[in-house]
Image 1 (cartoon, protein in one colour):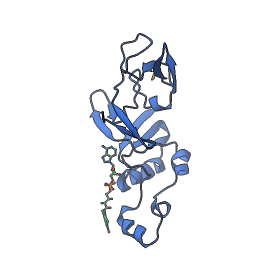
Image 2 (tube, protein in one colour):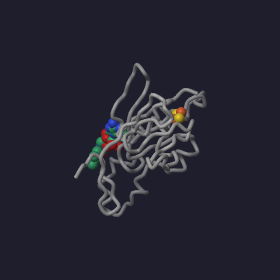
Image 3 (cartoon, helix red, strand yellow):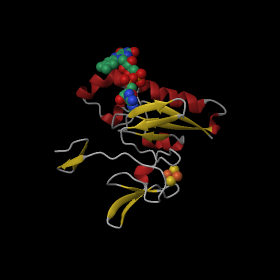
Image 4 (cartoon, helix red, strand yellow):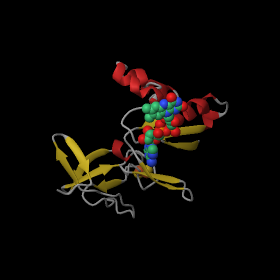
Length: 162
Ligand SMILES: Cc1cc2nc3c(=O)[nH]c(=O)nc-3n(C[C@H](O)[C@H](O)[C@H](O)COP(=O)(O)OP(=O)(O)OC[C@H]3O[C@@H](n4cnc5c(N)ncnc54)[C@H](O)[C@@H]3O)c2cc1C
Ligand code: FES
């Protein structure tokens, strides 16, 4: 399986996916899309019509089901911060990548604690990381980034100390 990463889920990013899956031979590709915005691609050209009564769903270019049916993994609210063409890796502001095999799945792992240290286990091969300092609790030489946060009325702000 060849992995294709699409950065941006705007009108062009969406159209790329639509045209790509219509091509023959696309079965050997796995598309993963990263969009910074919290919603799926929408019709930006007709955005002003939102104020004339159109809803977000009306303006949306597709449905969540469309991505599922076409085996496209869509990650919204996730900004690509780094593209490494040599290593063929990408990083996002959420640092959702597990450093073991660079699978973008860490946030789907189970949380718990070990010796009172809050931890997260990657769902792929169960490598486990401290949520305090990001160190690997299996003794491997992997580390994840950690950031200060603050919580205000159920909203989590990342990168704020006070
Ligand atoms: C009000 C308005 C009216 C317009 N009217 C017309 C018109 O009449 N006719 C016409 O042809 N064009 C029109 N345009 C322009 C048209 O909307 C744009 O040309 C088109 O949206 C460009 O599509 P795009 O996917 O390249 O970029 P965008 O729509 O800008 O989408 C890019 C997406 O990528 C995301 N992104 C960017 N960087 C990252 C990153 N590092 N990681 C993850 N996500 C990222 C952004 O958040 C965004 O969602 C209009 C635009 C506006 C705003
Ligand atoms: S990819 Fe996460 S443990 Fe292997």
